Structures are given as structure tokens and as C-alpha cells.
Length: 451
Image (cartoon, rainbow, N blue to C red; front, side, top):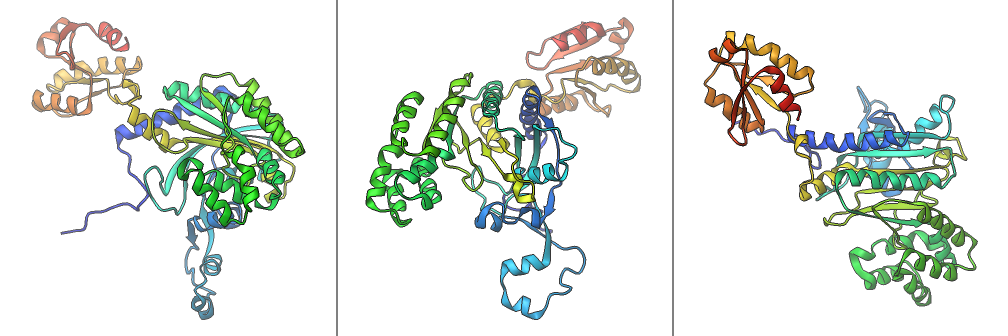
């Protein structure tokens, strides 16, 4: 017996209902991006490895899917190269391209490559899959979609405010209650300077970022392992456990960071965004938020669903010189990325999909034979012209089988025309949910379906 085919771990097939739900997510995000003046671009699935390597840190480089060179990829590879077994060395010789790890670095490459064609500030959005050679687990996949929006070529904090409004608009349309967490890299830098550990900012923030997962004691233990002294750890305690309203937190931190110009500048940026954001979603200043410090330079964002236990479903931040890695320094940018796969999981758990999203066909015409089908085809065309998703059963089989087909697909209405209907110039419409039937003319059928 032939082995059943399978797909790689960390990837998924999506059936018709799943695709309907995913397209609802993508289309909602796409509509909101367009509403705020963002334009869509796409970049290739594969990039030159020289574009990708070194942009995500050492761990990120390990998670890049590398593509073997075409043809005889071992040509020019000596026995010494194979014998050493150095993975990085061999990969550099065997692979010139890799699958994109995210959409941000390809976007930076795009901006530099097309800089003469772009009017700055440039507001772009991009909805495409990315790939990471990560260990698959719940909510984490090797192939997944990102839905990014970025503004490059502007230092204005109004961009941050607008991105927060976009987040609020998207999740309001989905019906998902969220909390938007916000912090600033400059504030974190000021804290590290204040305790005399400026060179440890990454270690400090990586540990603090785990507070919700591992607790305060374990965070402190990790800080000790990273080389911080007991006095430095003690100085961090009131900061790590900071509570209160946004105004109260900002007030406390202004006192704590009174001697740090960098930290105070970060607090001013947060004050600007917090005071101008107007939305239903809660926007919270959270000092423990420390994601993406390899390239974020200002405000940092993260969005959590309030009614489902799941990781971040949206994130982003300000990066002041990402295009500098491609020889175009001084171009500031800020962006967000919606995690479509996690949003999909949240909508599933909360059952928030509108019914029409998962209803592919609204109306099925029963096939009684050639003459009846010829009578129905013009009505079918009228229904489609009116925007009603309709189909005719292709074979003149038993009505029971056709009704089973309608039930299996969740088709809410069935249209039937036999000898009597054809003589009267009408058609029988059946509501599959209630079982009610009505003999009506084509225009009334279309009116009912459109309602």
C-alpha cells in the first residue's frame, strides 16, 4: 500500500471554509490599511542571502531557510570544505538565496532599490507569507502570513498615533477586545544607564520581557546570570513592578530618569502618542515590553487579545535607520505587523466570523433535466448579476442527493423549477433552515436573496 502523502511540519493545508475565514481577515486588514492611505506592494518569496543574513541577529540567521543553488550545487566545493562540516561555511558556498524571514527587511531593500521612484513619506502595506526554520508548536508555524504596514521617510510621531488607530479599527471590525501595550527603546536605554549597566541593555530587556511568563524571581535570577550586581537588580525592582495609570507611570518614570536625557526623550514620545490616541482599545504604557531591540529605536508596540490565552497578535515599532544596512542611511520608519494566523485562532475560539463569510454558495438550482435546466440558466445569470453567489447542480440525479449536497455545503436556499413552475413562469424557492417553500417569480427570488 502506497504511503499516505504528508506536508512538512509547521505548515498547513487550508480547505474552502478555512480560506473563506482567512480571506475575511486579509480583506478586513487590507481595507483598513487602504482607508488610512497605505499602498500595497509585494516582494519575491526568495531574496539573495546577502540581503537577509546579519539582519536578524545570530539566532535569526540560524532560522533562515536557505535554498541550494540551481544545477550542480557542489561544483567548486572541495573535500576540505565538506570535511570541516562548518554549517555556516558550507551554506555560504552552496546557497545564494533564501526564503524571506519577515517582510521588513525585504521592504527596506525595496525602498533602497526603488528610492528614485518613491515619494516620501512612503506608506506601504504588504500581505504575504514568510518562512522560519523554527520548532513548530501551538501558535508558531514555519510558514505563516504577515500583514505589515510601514511609513518610511518621516520622523513624526503622528505616524505612531495613526498605527495605533489602525490597530483599534481592525480589531473593532473583528469584534476582538484587545489591549495595546506600548513602550519606548529610549526609556529602556535610560533605565540601563541609570543603574550603570548601559552595555547590558539587551540582557536586561530580554529578561524583563519574560516577566509575564516566568515571574519576578526568575527574572531576577536571569539578571544575575547576565552579570548584574545585587544593587543594580535592586534598583530595577520598582521599575519592573511599576503599576498605576499611564499618567501615574509616566510621572514616576520622569523622576526615576531625571538624569537621563535619552530616557526623558523616550517618555516625551510616549506622552505624545498616549495623549493623542483616540480609540476603543486600551492603550497601556508597559515597561516590561522589550521586543525587537535589535532594530527598534523608539516606540515599541504589542497587542494582546483580552478574552483568549495566546501570544502577541500584533506588534511593531520605530526603526530609525533600517535602510542604512543597504547603503541608504537616515531614513526613519515605523511599522506594525498583524499576526494573521493567531488572529485566525482567536476568531475561531471566540466564534466571531460573520455567517456570510463561511457561506460560499447562497443559492443552488436543482437539476431536473435538460429542459428544466435551460429554463433555470437565465434566472441563474440574473442572480449572479445581482451579486448572489449561485450554482446549478451539474447532473440530473435524484433530488435527495442534490439536497444532501446543499446541506453538506451549508447552502441556505435551493431553487427548483419543474413543469408547473415553467408553465407559470415562476420558480420554487426553499429555505433550507426552516423548510418553507414559496412559488415566486425571478425578480422576487432575487429580492429575497439580496435581503
